[in-house]
Amino acid sequence: MIIISPYSKALRNGKENPKNYPYWEEVLKGIKEPVVQIGIPGEKQLCEDFRVNLSFDELRALLKECRTWIGCDSFFQHMAWREGKKGIVLFSRSDPLIFGHPENVNLLKSRDCLTKFQFIIWEEQEYVPDVYVDPNEVIKALELF
Amino acid sequence: MDSVLCSIGTRGRYDTTLPLALAAIVNQTKIPDKLIIFDDNDEPRDVREELIYKNLFQMMELKNIEWEWVFAHKKGTHWNHQTANIMGYKWVWRMDDDCIPEPHVLRTLLSYAIRKNAGAVGGSILTPPLPKPFKATGKIEKINEEPNIQWGLITKEQQVEHLHCSFVYRAGEYDYNTGLSRVAHREETLFSYGLHQRGFKLYVVPDAITWHLKNPDGGIRSETDESLYIHDEQIFANFMQYRDHTIVVLNCGLGDHIVFSKILPEIKKPLIFSCYPDIVPGHAIAHAERGFGNLDQWNIYLKMSQWEWKGSLENAFRKLYL
Image (cartoon, rainbow over all chains, first blue to last red):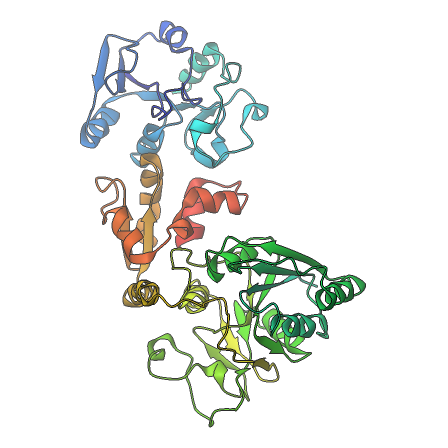
């Protein structure tokens, strides 16, 4: 089983969070095993098994159960790191050298895509469409696990 | 040679002691790279073209001392000193607008600071007539029992835990508490003791006399509202009460709390304020704000920005708390 954590925290100004990966549907087509999506109500459901508002204990239990996980740069990558479960993080504008963990596979299209302002609030960052890794790269990375 | 900024705040002393203080700075045997003057006057006046000031600034230009006159935000001397603290200089010499340093003061303080790899170094701050000789430890636990060691003639080097009024300090290592009121009561004590707590050594040294021309009119702390002093004294008392603890304020996101949790076991006697007590147990952030004033010194994102941080978030927390 693979966990996906597709979305970062909703922004207070209602705009799309620039950390959110836009090609989940393409990625899911390439995964040939059960997938559990985690998130909160209101987020777009991407697969049949969508579990919302899981407690930290439930998330930890799910992490123990899964083969690996894929997520964007959100709290979940940090939680999995603390639990010792390696996974794939889809970076775009935030810097994996600062916010990532070397134990994970941190996918980044190019360092040119990183915002110069790593430490300001994400409401002040624009959503830039062309900064995300190709879904085939994500599938290729999954083969490493 | 390390870069040195001289920072001076002024209020109500355009026509009394400020020009004397500036003249004393210009005539140092070791000159600062830059002098910044924070004008906190209620009714500011542009004195830069007035005869005495114009001459003083021309002298600075002749001596290659960069100078800047800033019409400040009237929020108190701590805000001005914090601005100077993060301007990118290695050392800051903080001065008052009623203080006249003897010509070799900066040279003496700076040479000690560099040689001793110190966090801050101060000399005597003498107000005529001189007090009777006294002994003082310079330890924070004695702050309410003994006169400040800098008020007397310092005859030998001594390590202390806090400094007063004017001293040279290592910039950018600890923040001024901008949560204090406009009077900024205890601001230099909190700041210098914070450097001490961060592991830097503080010294008072001989042969570095600054004369304090006590003047009841004006002054950067000139306020009559007693409640401001009470407010600041309470913040100071809270810092003192928990001085053997490491104050941790996690005013940040869920993921940041999780990353922080990795270094928590290494922190000595943590007193924690947390947004996510499920992840890092602690008191509410509002309590930290009430108890300790401004929380910027614990804002990990502000700190990473100030440090132009390129390393990991985990190591940024280490730098802040270990």
